[in-house]
Length: 65
Image (cartoon, rainbow, N blue to C red):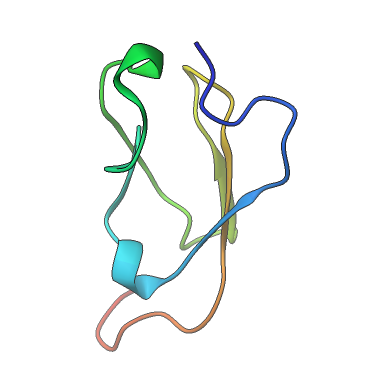
């Protein structure tokens, strides 16, 4: 069920935006409906389905609010 339950946070960068869970590399058995997550305002986000914790690292791309 969970992609990242009880694991360390998943680091994402500007390359991963727009961020969605499950991520492209997630295994099929742990899939859930795709949900887009905003990590740009607070620097982190938690998936409401699987509780995967994403943390943004680096700089935002130019023109991003």
